[in-house]
Amino acid sequence: MLDDLDQLELTEPGADADAEGLDLLALLDQQLIARLLLRVRWAREQQLQRRAVGLPATALAQENAMLRQYVARLGPDGAGIALAILALSAPAARPLPADPATDR
Image (cartoon, rainbow, N blue to C red):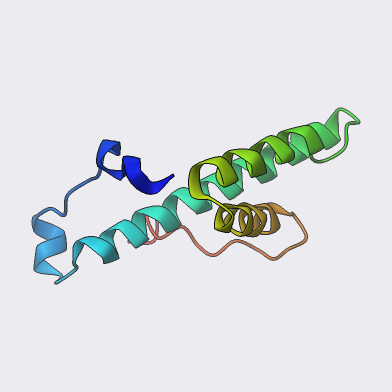
């Protein structure tokens, strides 16, 4: 589960982050949010492409595999995280917030 955190490649805060007074956890939160937004955008694009060729918007088998992966890596709480990501990815959920990386 979480024992292999030391194997993750983490981006250490640079001079900009230090200058803004951000700590490592805040920087990691920003990176997680940016990656989640990217994942949600890609998922919504894939849904549009599937609809364009007459398929269901989502592949249930793919979503189930994602849920299993999150549970396998993060334990029971991983299911809640995966379900929240899938909910964010639903096209009718709500418009995505602006991408912080492009709003600077």
